[in-house]
Image 1 (cartoon, rainbow, N blue to C red):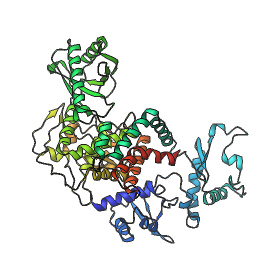
Image 2: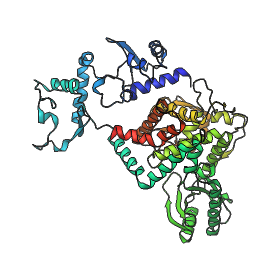
Image 3: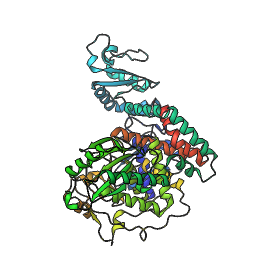
Image 4: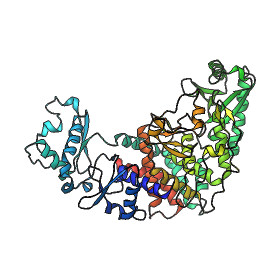
Length: 562
């Protein structure tokens, strides 16, 4: 990604989402004073007046408008997502003539079944439309007439009253912003404040600050990762039990995959196992209910396994169970060999350079600590795919670390597994990473890359190594042979999701489809706070930086939201 594109994405994020967070004034229409950007300590080194003019002039998509209205101002033409514009962001002398738009939006908000009234202390009073018939619990308009709810000043009509409240008291009625995010942060904060979590945190921080410079990540990994030798030993016991307990199903082979097989297992991780039948004629192309049920019955009869739960309706049906002797939880499937091949690619990638292993391992720990991985959120594989895509993008003065999957497959014989080509070649197609590119710089680059990324507008495609505009993809204007060939007998890529992240090999599979809108908002907020950590001049050591990333972000969010 060129510097100009990176700057444009950063400007778009600021104008559409981040103005209030960065304490930059923004009008109701979305206009931001140019001086507030070029004089801001975080943006001054990247933007000046001429640079902003060049970005607007060269932008073929007409994403920005720049105007002179007493002072130079700029806005994003797609609008902003900032729900409540602060008092320091509203200028009545410039925006009174836009009052009609403001007033209509206020009336639409009042018509909603639930709304919130904000005062200058950011406190709210929640009303319910269904209670409007009650003489003691009425809406703001009927209760107060044309009187200001703050200073009680009377007005001849409701329009003048609303105009006064907006300009003088910074009151704006709208749907309750960030209520879901506030609840989520509060729940996570409660979870990490338990005695057990606090003890683990103290142990890690004590060890972290005593570690030698350059050994901080090793210290973190020691506390969060499983011991590889012990893990291998435990898996051998599990494998022996499964072969012993599944005698009715002759000719089967077990293939571990996921974090255990790739070497990314953290404490508390489960073990994923794919069961392959040597006599493939006994299985249909995908899911064989008979074999699935027989495995389920064998596990139920066994004394080595407990908590057996068959999940038949998932995209990949699995049997969840617990191996009693080792205490490990297992996810067993018989219909998805592609997972084994995905894991093989990740494992080979990690072995290529230890810095890539450290990058992915730390981000998994970071995501686990902030509860970014789980139900309704991204999977570990989705996070790894995001890291893969980030490494495929050129950064400022740095070429891309990895080529696209398409390039890795060029001139390599096909390796078709259930119709998907898992062929690739790493050794001759990836250049060694520059020595000066440390793991810390890779971590920082990941956060800064996704801070400006517009998830709602682009499909992330590691296969192509680029972000594909979703609107063009939906209209069929952008396609590629690999997707067409891969999609002949399968459902098309699911685009009606909050996040579209294409599997690097199974091109019709959206690995980000499980992410809800709330969790996308939470993920982006965590990314923004992570960037703030790297830009904080008061944080001078790696130990302080990693502490802030793992434990400080949720505290900062709680201060802002709760």
